[in-house]
Image (cartoon, rainbow, N blue to C red):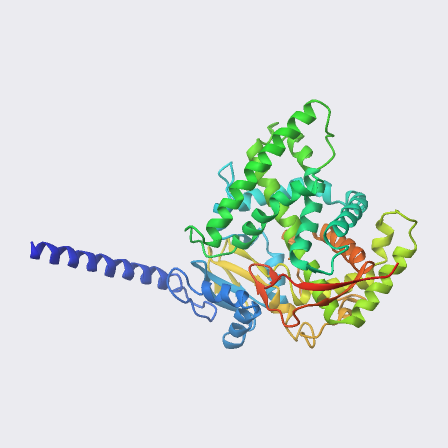
Length: 480
C-alpha cells in the first residue's frame, strides 16, 4: 500500500512538472521569432497583466507605458497582457501606423473575457458584433440627427440638475455624472425618460463597466463574476422593453423613427432577415455602455479641474452665462449655442488629454509586418495608449500643465490627441459625446460654483479614470 501511494505521488509530481514545462515552453516559444521588439514577456499565462492593471488601480496607468518606453524603446516594446504576446506601439507614429492599417495589417481585438461579459446570442464575437453596430449607427449620429438631440439633452440636463443637485449643500459628482449620461442614453436610444426606470439600471451598469477589463477569474465576488451577472440582468430587462416596443409598434403607439430601438426592430439585413430580440438586446447593451461611460468620466474630471483652477472656471462661466442670457425664459439650447462654446470645449479637451476616458485599445496582427525595424508576427496583439502621446513632452510641452490654449487654432499635431481613438475605428459617438459634455458644462456653471471636499483625493483607473471617493464637492449656487 505504501508503494502504491509513493507511485501516485511520483505520478502527480511528474504530471505537475510536465505541465509546468509545457507551460514555460509555450510561453517562451511565443517569443522565439527573430528581430522582435525589446521587452519582457513576464510570467507564464498572466504575463505582465497584473502590473498593467495595477498601475491603473494606483491612478497612474501611464507608468506601465513610460517605464518601458524608457527601458526598451520609445516607439515599440513587447510584453504579455491577458495571456497574449503583445507589442505596445507608442507615440504619434505608433498611433498613425495602427489607425492607418485597420483591416490591412491589423484588426480590432478584445480579450476573450469581453465575450463572456457580452455574449452574443448569434455565437459571434464582440468584434463581429461591433462591425454590425457601426453599420446601424450612422443615421443616428449624422449632423442633422445630432442637432435634433440638443434640445432633448438640455431638457434632461435641466431635470437632472433639479433632481440631483439643486437645494443640496454637497454632492458626489461621479455617480451624478453617470446618472446624467445614462439618462440621456436611455432617452435617446430607448425613449426611457422615467428617472426611476433609469435608476434601476445604474448599479448593474456600474458593475458591468468595472469588470470589462479585469482579470478573467469567474469566482463569486470577483469583478469579472459581478460583471457577468450584471450583464445577464440588464439583458433580461432590455428584453422586456423590446417586447413592449414590438407590441407598441404593431398597435401604432410608437413611432418607427423615434429611436435606435425602433430602427433595429424594423430594419432587415440584405437577406430580408430581421434581428431577433436577444440580438437587439446585445447591441443596445453595448450602445448604452459606450454611450454613457466615457462621457461620465469626462464630465467628472471637468468638475475636478474647474474646482482646482478658478481662473479657468471664470472663463467657462463667462462664455456660458453669455449664452444663457441670450435665451428667452424656458428656451432650450440649440446648435448655434453649441458652436459658441469654443473655450468650454478647449477646456473639455484638455481634461480628456490629462484624464483620457479611453486609455487605449487592442488590435490583432492579421499579417506579419515590420514596425520601426522590428518584426511583429501574425496573431500578436497590439496596444496603443493615449498616454504615450497625451503625457509626452514631445507631443505636448509641459505635459502636466493644464493649458486649454493647446487646442486653439489648428490644435495638436495629428495622432497626438486621441481620446476617441482614430482611423476607421474612431469612436462613432465622438460628436454625440461633445454635445452631452457641453450641455452638462452649460447647465452646471450657470447654476453653481463649487469646492472639492477632498483636496488630495486619489484617482483610480479601472478601466476608466474615476475619483476614489466619487469626488464630493460643496455647492455654491449663483444668486438669481
